[in-house]
Length: 249
Image 1 (spheres, rainbow, N blue to C red):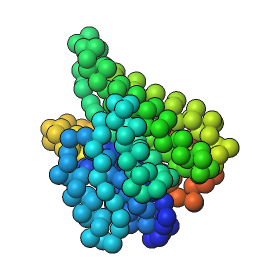
Image 2 (image 1 turned 45 degrees about the horizontal axis):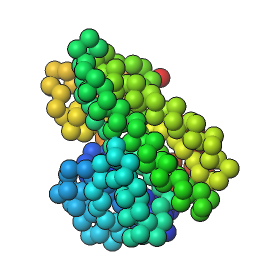
Image 3 (image 1 turned 30 degrees about the vertical axis):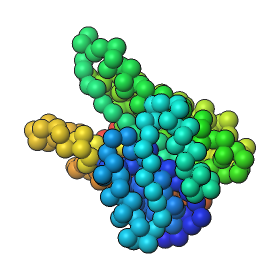
């Protein structure tokens, strides 16, 4: 698979850590030039770029709040200005603001929707212009296992991630004629900063819900994303690929 994405340019939002970091490294390993987006984590983003270049790849870090339309326009323009085009968009940036429904504030609702769903509309809209001209593109949007199953205390997160699925399916229908595929990845519990912050007892209870008996690795999600970005997935669009250890079937 090495070299499979030679000549392609990819943008990974929230690419400085967790699934985004693993994805940026995997796409670069497959030959893509990778734009690593971050909002506040400049140091970790530069470390990802450094790791890419040390391995012989090409990449650069780009700061932008993906919930801000003007910032996204500038981000896409900067990526295209530096690398000449944008072929692959991985919408990975996301946050959580958990609370039970009766205690959830409108600010908590809006913050999650702005970063987890509104941002995907903005980035897809900006990236699609160039993909349409080039008549080729791959968009992979990160949703979640809880978008399929629901989850107590996460009404904002679940609703936003469910919206990602609807957005992805609609865009898949709109742009298939231009050889642009749009798919969603639904990770389960993955070894990221968010899961690491959960107490050991709660993690043990979570693992009991997973038939494969463990938390997933960011690299396992990155491999699924990389597959959907490749020519091997040229006939796959409008789908939700679950990477959850069997937690939800």
